[in-house]
Image (tube, rainbow, N blue to C red; front, side):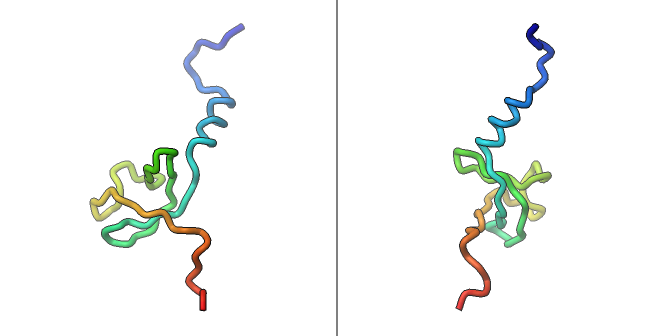
Length: 72
C-alpha cells in the first residue's frame, strides 16, 4: 500500500542529505562565523538564521577546512 499522506520518507531525507553539506561559513560583512549548509548551487545559509547574519548581511564565505590558524 502506498503512503499518500505527503510525509517525507527516510529515502527523501537521504537524498536531501546528499544535496547539501554542512560547512562553517563567515559573514562577508562582519566576520561572524556560523554553522551552515551549502547547497549544490553554491548557496550558503546559516543553520537557524532564516534572514542571514545578525548584522543584516546575507553573503557568506565557506571556511576552507584545509586551512588552519597555526600554519607556519
